[in-house]
Length: 248
Ligand SMILES: [Zn+2]
Image 1 (cartoon, helix red, strand yellow):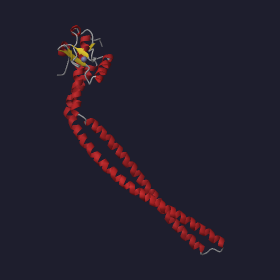
Image 2 (cartoon, protein in one colour):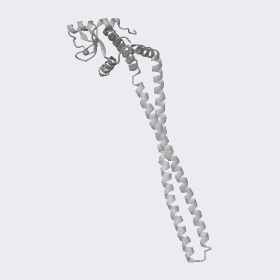
Image 3 (cartoon, protein in one colour):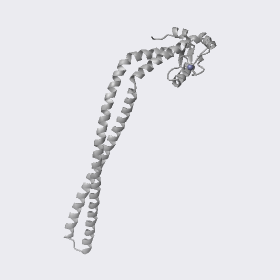
């Protein structure tokens, strides 16, 4: 690509500024909607994860409760078995051994009953937590689809304009070299989206500070890129404004 004249560089930078300002206007029309939608998506994702976690905990509590239940039945059967064995034993030693077995099975059963109560209590708590989480999820989900619908409508409304501007921007970008682009973006970020401004009635079109007459003459020559001494924005002359390849 052959090196552009400074005048052409200024024209493309000014044109880029016009396109970016129009894209910014479209973004402003969308307002907070994109960030609201993103925030709600995150919230819904978090609530889904929480609901899943609670439902997993509920499954586990049920498994634990059922295991305790089976354990209690098993202990009761053993106690019955030992008791009938006691009726048949021949020695005190055997009888006492079975008594110890019975006591152990009863102690185990008691502990399992306590465990079961704990698991039941846990399930009660989880049940209300799950209900609360589902209600929150439903509410956030409804809000999200509402806002997504609004955003889709706004996007659709400006789709053509945005595409046209994006296309225009890409055409301009191939004409602007990296160091100028870097400078442009840096000023734009620092100065609320405005990096290139015209000198109007002897003043900077960005900060409205006076530009010295001698500097205005130099700017009109389009032989160097000048920045405002006060705000740092790139200054262009009327001539650039009038001949810049803008959309509108
Ligand atoms: Zn300025």
